[in-house]
Image (cartoon, rainbow, N blue to C red; front, side):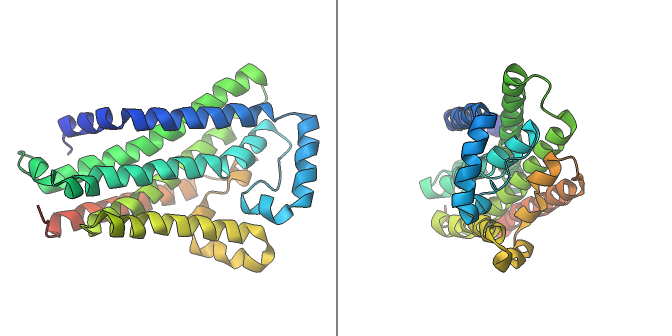
Length: 265
């Protein structure tokens, strides 16, 4: 189904980028976890009261009463969503449009692999990077939480939180992938795929900022990722399954579009 040599090649090319993002995620995770303290919590509450709409827009309006809820609001509500999204946008451009921009797509197509197999390999690699990023972030938070606050992290809700985030990132990644597959110009592809993901994020932030804009939540798939409800144990895995199904459909569409379009090589 995929080209293993191409998959390994992309892994070697992307290792530095992945290490950089892993370091950034580790930095934010360690800093936010040190803030789980009653005294600092009072300070955060005072800041929230001073700027309620700003905190709500970034999903930080409620620090929660447990460590799991605290992580869901202050890490998974924004940082652990935006940073991997930036990574996926960069990968979408590098994996598909980058080869066309450099004129090296002809080298890939000259191999025994058909065009659909090359596109499927790149799609799987991008999706795998999104999933691995969530596994790394979730594992890191688990290790730090066990070391700093033994017994306070709820395993079940935290697992559902990470599974839903992984599915959401796969969906957003598939939007970026479809964009770069649809256009030969990388700038237009990124404007369609990456720009649409940014619009989804902005709509979500506006929907969370107040009742006036709450209706915007129906215009973005980010609504399916209710980090607060998942951390509290009230969420289900149906949204994750829906997001994963949507991602599979969009990736398949991107592969189909790439196999049918004319390439300027």
